[in-house]
Length: 315
Image (cartoon, rainbow, N blue to C red; front, top):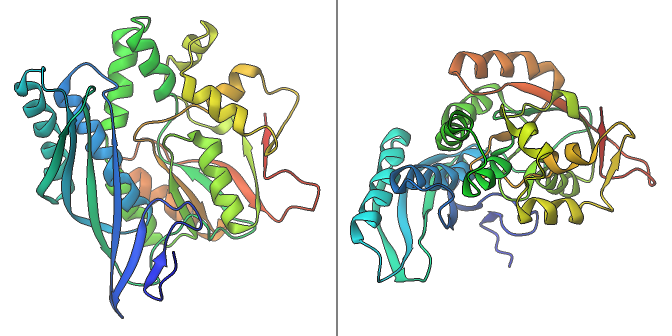
């Protein structure tokens, strides 16, 4: 659908919609929800809320309000739902937004998330389709949450590894977004269900460019590679990898486990930022001062030839 006031819609698979209200105000709209990935209902609520807010942060916008989106079984103790909502409310408080209501339905499996509204100056949004050739690619959280949470469901992960992954998923991308807004970047996407390479593909296809990333530079959550060596990976991750067959050129030193890791379906992952090289040092410094989990440059954007793949993964 097109409309003169719809600045960002579905055309480029962006993280949120942007609708212009006036010359100096646009609203940013998104919704996201999913079933539990951890046993603790309060922590599940925190992670789901942080994940929903990330779509607005990725657009370089300021979230202001949200609505709860709930599916809940009729035969489960309602106190569990109360804890989920408390977890979401705690992240809303941290983000400085108000949860103004919501909607619930009876569902066989619990589900929770937020519909989030943000604001941005029209034209100042950070879309995922506006990378420039020569940009550097920077990632603000390590990857591996899909593998680790799957191991958690199978009771095959050390408690400290799972706890670290949970803390990473529950961390807001607020400070990372503020840093990129202050520095000024060309494009951004948050890394969620399609994995690092899936979201990078969307960015490059939308921008009409190619990207090269270096496996050795991608930050990885401690303990992830050990779990991969045990053959643990979620189904969504394997589907992601399969979907990349015609998109990615893998250097010969990239192992099958490396491919799985770079395709791992993330929950509440970091921001993948495309920034002019002249601004990269300033962005890294700002992210470091803000205490983000990573400020690692993992690759670069280039103008591909007709025969180049969308993404080249080097060692």
